Every structure is written in C-alpha cells, then in structure tokens.
Length: 388
Image 1 (spheres, rainbow, N blue to C red):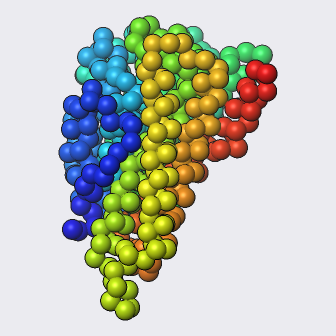
Image 2 (tube, rainbow, N blue to C red):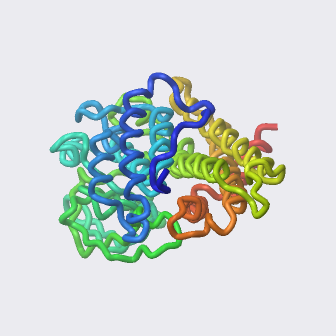
C-alpha cells in the first residue's frame, strides 16, 4: 500500500458511539482525501484545496454552529471521534477541522447581530481564532479600533472570518474577542515549523480596523461557558473543560495512523537473517506497549468528551481532571509514536515514510500550551488539596 493511503481500521477504544455515524462516515472520506495529499501538503505548508473543500462538506465548520443559523450544535464526543479519524490520514487536516469547529463554538458568544453576520451565508463559514491576548485595542464610539499581529493562526489561509483576542486593561476592560471578516486582515507567511506544517498557522495582521459592538464579546464569558444566547449544551461548557480535546484529538488520529503504518511495515520486513522483524520479542513488546498507550489515551479523551456532553453541570473537579487527562493522553501518545518510530529503523526516517511525519506532527502538536502536563498537574493538585 502506498505510504499516503489512509490506514485501515484497527480495534478502537471508546469514542466511536453509534450516534456519530454521519459525521464519522464523512470523516472517513476526508481522511482518504487528506492522506493522498498529506506528503505534498507537508512540503507546501498548507492543505490542498480539495482537502479544505472536503472538510467543509463533511460539516466540521458547521458542527458547533448554533441551530438558529442552520448549524448542528453537535456533541464533543462526535467531534472528537471524527477529528481522530481524519487525523489517521493527515494530522494537519484534523487540526484544522478541530479548530474550525471549536472556533464556531466561540462565535456563539457574540451578540445575535454579530452571529447573523458571521453565518449570513450559512453554517459552513470557516472561522479561525487567535487566543493569545495581544494587539492594541482602543474604545471608540460604537465599538473599538483594533491593530496587531496574531501569530500561529491555524487554517487562516482558508478562513472567512477570524476571532482575535485583545489584551485586558488593568482596572478596566478584562479582555475581549473581536470578530473580523476576511477583508479586515492580512496574512503573513511565517509558519516554517518542523511538524504540523500543513496547518498553515501563519500570522494574522490587523491595521487600525474598526470593530462594531456586535462583533465582540468578553473573554470571561467564553472561559466560563456563560453568556451565549444558545441553549445547546455545547455552548454552555467552560473552555477549560474541553480545551484539551481541541488539540489532543488530532494527535490521537496521528498516533493511530502511525500504529497502522508500523504494523504494515513490520508484516513485510525481514532482518538480515531473513527472519520476520515482527517476530522479534523486542519489536513485539514495543508495538504492543505503543498500542496500549494509544488505547489508554483514547479512553481518557473519551471520558472528557462524555462528561462535557452530559446534562449535569460541569464541576471544578471535572475541569481540573480534564486538563490533566488531556495532557497525560498526549504524553502517552507521544511515547507510543516514539516507540513505533524507533522500531521502524532507518526506513521510517525516509522523507516518503508516513511514520516520520507522524513523529514530527505528534511532537509539534504536543508542545501546544494547552497540552502541558505541568499546568494541568498544578490545577488538578490545587483543586485536590482544596477539597480535603
């Protein structure tokens, strides 16, 4: 099988509920398309237009859009499973799919007039986000004047709108998000990273743009999961309860794809004595341990998603545990891919081999600030100590 053909299924853990079938079916189509273009997209540092079109048609941009704008207001479990499927074919495509979906969830905190502008043409609007609090914001009659640079804005080359975060003012405005139509910002080609290259996470640039009041909302509302006029569960969950899922789900897909690629290679490979490499006890131990680590990570992410979808109120203990679990899941998956990459030997290091791309992508994604275990551990232990 060619190295960029989408991997076939292996036994899965717990994030493929039957209710996710429509999005999962669409995700499998996207994964096959993304896999065909994965190597070239990695070199070009941007997704192929066919992949972008497939992501939109599958419904990722519309997944968390409010139903009042013909969106799906879908579940976290459904999205996590679908993003992971896409990640088996291309981690960058999965990352883009996840961020488009979650940014639409953020946009649901805008006033109704602002939401109407974003989804004027339908729920498939591609909205990107820049969460770093930067830029220069100045209050003016009817809104704000905004300037600044927001690096690492994934998927921005194919965006219709963007949400950028402005800094808070001591003793004043605590910080806001601002919605910008595509003609209000420029893009600078600054994304030259070792991994997740096809996400095209370039720099969004704004030069003295007026933002009316209806295109802004408080950061605190989104973080707290309050202030949205939508009654849907997905629009009333605190950010930190689910933020790790946004970035961990693509890693899950990449790790599962790496496992399949490794298994296929080991099935055919022989050592210098003509013995099957897959029969080596050391290799078997490495692959089995990697598969177990990926399954454990999937279970952790499945628990986060299930709790977020539950009708019960999200507790502080749950938020603290979810942050810990998402970071731990990514550490486990990074360890798994490391094992598989080492087992692949020199061949896996070839530019044409999908294992080396998975290895680069998993390490790059795992460095995201939302997936650092130290931060998750601090929040978890602080809550644990406060509860005893």
